[in-house]
Each structure stands twice: as structure tokens, then as C-alpha cells.
Image (cartoon, rainbow, N blue to C red; front, side, top):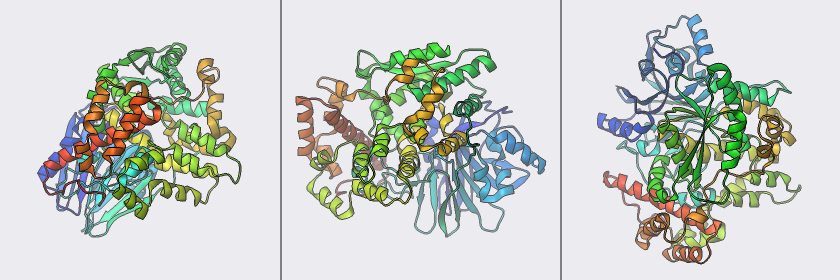
Length: 609
């Protein structure tokens, strides 16, 4: 029997559409790394639900798909963790429901039977849920995601109302009915914002369910998506450190070893300090912490700050050194697990870090993700908020999101692709117009864009996919409803530049960590992507003129000029552009390989036509 929480998983399914056993096996196989411990499937006329399970606790409990004798006709699958499942279970038992174990997801059929599609508004945690209601003559599909989109759910709404869904993009396109064709404009979106933001994926007709969304489908109606109100309320004047500490303690409870990721910065440092105190008081043992660094001496090294946090908190500290010579081997694997391109070099670091966490025997890792978005910690947000009234804050803010600056982007595009973007509208223009036309205050506009569009697509998807690549569950205390609600209630001056967090950290973290300026966890690509390294050799191989012709949107002469400029004088701009193009081409090659085994899909050539 499962004594506490059930499991992180990967889920899949179809509704009002055909899906063969072969399709379902292929989809499950492509995301098995995220759920290696068990596999379950249920099918009926026109529907299917499946799950790959990562057992965070006793694997004997919590078998999926979930079905209950006290909630007949409701079948559910679930990816994530429900931190309020004990409270919900007590409520449901009072209503007569009986559960075979204490796993969190087991209660989902009963919760839906009692509350219908409103059940998702009662859940607190990180989750993607899919269930089928078979109690009426016509079945119904319900999908739901947590308030921040910590658990991605990709879906394809087919003509005629059929729906296919999966936790990972490469898995979803294993359904024979789901096309796998790049959107022409996606390359420009990627180079403009480092990934495709919002709910649009890099592939045509494939989207992600938005954060805090519930979607319902009946046969022939298609998927109807609506957003829920965010959970969480905190009284005015609530103590931030106290609220954060309460959530850290809740997320540190598990029947498997728990560690923390410690970058050396403020956000992860606070989580580390609070989790270390909990480990000593409750478990009577020190917390283990992990920090990633690179062999050799590199600019921006944060090792000393991470060690200072670990010493102050009394943790068992693991400093993981990765050899840059390994990057050319690690990067293709990283890109594969991401599912769609992400231009931030931190992706490779994230992949290597969770590999080390798993190798040391840990299944749960607490992280500091989400604080910068909630408390306006990024330099670009602070600069936008500090701009005088009437000044153009939008243009520099949008420019700061780019993997490749606009002038350089234009030089890399073919004339046909530039003409296509002039006709369709560039990503930069669309985002600029969106921000300028927003009705709220500047702070609200920025926070909404960062938390609802950029955070789930760019940041949380990276953490989810790359931690689950190694079957590690990443838990994020800052994104708990109580902390998010408290952040929303704080005066703007305390939310800006993380002033409230800095105040909370004094006396808890080393003064050197509290005083240090903001420094993103990064990989110094400009120092590593140089002549004679395996990484540069990979870039030159992948960005050959032959590969660029297959894409049809990138100009071989422009890319060649970028290589020449970087050889003459390596810089963060040229290195970042080469990295972004390399990641995109590695992803495109993987897509071509997947499609080569599915001749139903046309070639990628000529996308810009």
C-alpha cells in the first residue's frame, strides 16, 4: 500500500478518435523514461487512457488508470503530485467513498463524481489530469492542468472533434493520426523568444493546455478550454518567510530521498535553508544539496556562493563537475528530451544536474524556480518597471527576450522567409502589440506575460522534461498557491526586484549571498564554443549548407558569416546565436528521423514557400 503520495508519471490518450494498440504502445514507449516503473492502459469505443508511472513511493499502490467501486464509470490518469490529497480524501470518505490505498491520484474518480469538471479547482499541487466519464450514453473527456503549468499536456484537436494528448511532444506525434509538420513562423518565434511561448507548439496543430485550465470534450464537439481562477489566499501582512517555510516543509515530505538544488543564489538558497532545517528537525539528518559546475576555470563561477549556502545550512553538499568535452554528446540527448527547441544553454546544465541527482539515489529535488517571475527579479523586468511614464519600455523588454538580436536574425533568414514574415507578421511585432494593448498596469502586464506565457513554456517545461528524463521529481515551493497568492498581495515596491525575498533572507543566508547582484544560472557558451572543441565541430557539422537547404528558412551565406564573425572575435551574441541555431538543427534532424519512419508526412523542405 502507498503510504503518502503516489507518483510522477507520463500520461497519454485519445478521445472520439481511433487509436490502435500499436499507436498507444508507440506513444507510451517514447515517454517511458519519465515513468519507468509501471505501465497501464484502458480502452473503450472511441477512447483510451494510458500512463507511464514513476513510483515515488511503494510501487504496489496507486496503479493507473484509476477506477473506484464508489465512483463507477469514471476512469482517470494523472501526472504530478497533489499536496492536499489528505484533506480531500477525508472529505470524500465522509461522503461514502472507499479507497484501496492512500495514493494521491486514487481519489480523482471520486472527486470528479462529486464535483464534476469543477474538481480541478480543488486540487493543490502540480498536475496534468485526464479522465473519461462513461456514466452517460455518450462519454466525456476532461483534461486539467495546475495553476502554473508545471506539468505540460500536449494535445492535437483533429478535424471532426477527435482529441489526442500526451505529456511529451515526441510521444504525441507517435499517434498515426497526429501530423508532425513544423509551423513556418515557429523558427522566428524561437529565435525571438528562445522557445515558442504561450500554448502554441513548434508543430502545426499541436498545442499545450494553458496553466490553470480545464478542458471538456464530448463526441463531435471538439475541446472547449476555459481558465480557472488561481487557488490560494493569504491574509494581508502574512509573513513571507513563514509561508514559504510552511510550503517547503509540505513539499519535503516523501517516502523517498529528498534533496535540494542549490545554485548559490537567493531563491534556491532560501529553499535550501528552510528544507535543511526541516530535515534536521523531522528526519534527524542533514539535507543533501546539489550544485553543477564545469571542469576548469570559467567566468561567472558560482561554486563559492553555493558552498557558503551549504555550510550555513549544514547540508551534505555535492558539487557536480561536468567536462565541457562531454557537451557535444550531451546536447543531442538534451534536445531530444526537451521535445521542442529551447535556446537557453542552461538546458544542458539542467540535464546534467538531474542526471547526477538520480545517480546519487535521489528521486525528489526541491528547486527555487518561479521566484524571479513572481517577484520581478529579472533585470529586464526591473528595467521595464523603472522606465519613466510615457517612455517606450516595451521595445527594449521584447528585445531582451531574444536568443538572436533582430538585425542578426534578419541576416540569417532567406529572402523568401523574410518575405513570409513581412506578410504574416514577425513574432517581435506580435508580442510588442500584445504588450502595448494590454489593459492592466505595467506591473500587471509584465507579471501576466512572464507567469502565464514565458514561465510555463520556457522555464517549467525545461525543468519538467529534463528532470523526468532521469526519473526525478522537481518540486517548486515558490509556485505553491499560498506563496503565489502572497506575492500578488504584496505592494508593488516589495514585489519588484525581489525586495521581499531579500528582506526574508537576512539572517537566514550568508550576507555575501544576500548582497550579491542577480546572476542567472548559466553556461559560458562564448568561452566554450571555440575552435578545436567537440562542441564547435558539432555546430559546423549540423549547420552545413546541406542541412540548411532542407530547412529552407536559413541562409547558408548568413550562417557562414556568423561563424566567421565568431572565429574573429567570440562574443556572447555570436556564441548565443550559434548555440540557438545548433539546438534548432539538432531538433529538426530528430524530427526528420521520426518522420522517416512515418511516410504519411510530407518532407520538411520548402517550409518558407
